[in-house]
Length: 168
Image (cartoon, rainbow, N blue to C red):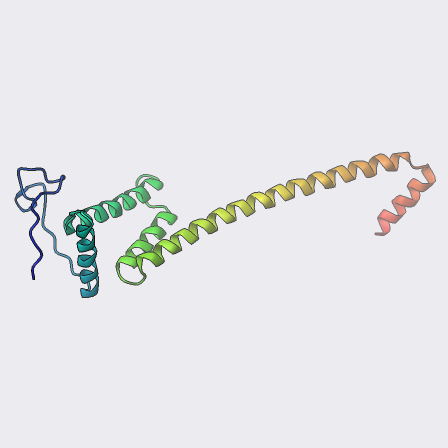
């Protein structure tokens, strides 16, 4: 049984023209696996049963807009509109998911893991730098303390300490 026709138009279209008659809209055809198409239709019918009347083109418009924004954001990360290495990697992940190499969930999960690893690496670098500063400060302090204590030693012990240091 065919799907019933919508009785109202989407707010993006306005009230005067249907999308098909509106010169600001263009028709596009996409080939998707049958299983995806059936699940998509089922999801739209579920939304309709909940009182949300949304058609395919509304959903696809949002998805296409978000993808476009992601590409544009990645371009802005680079210098003079060129993509950064991270931007290219993110887009490659998206395109791979769109091409069926990975699911969108897998891609999002990988992106999230990559971001988490970047944050952890940055934190570890900060901790290592901090520990290095602390270590260098402690070494400097110990050297000063040894020099001060050496000054307090009698001359004959100073000679013995110097001999021990040269033999070590």
